[in-house]
Image (cartoon, rainbow, N blue to C red; front, side):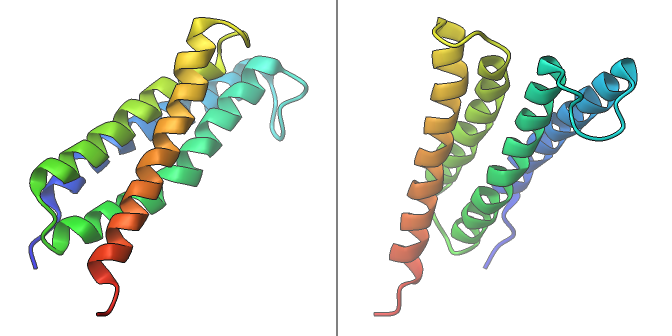
Length: 134
């Protein structure tokens, strides 16, 4: 078993993105003087959901991919899964700040979440096939 260095590389980039999202929420809270909730502020609400959506999906996908990498999954597949996750998590915020019906919304929010869920399912199925006792 080897260390999941490819996954760790992408996770470091994702961690920086997560920090940026957290700082965005904190900055909006401070500027709008909101301690809890969103105070019915649409921009703050969107930032909170982008931040929350990130933490709802990224850990489980990264864990699955790290286990796959540690078990010998080819590096190309690990790069595809983690690169796709990074792309999806960059697209999603773009869509969350766009008006519904615009191309930014479709590519960002819809595309980002569809790509995220596709990668989640792919990693889960990969793990089931790799670790299912035969």
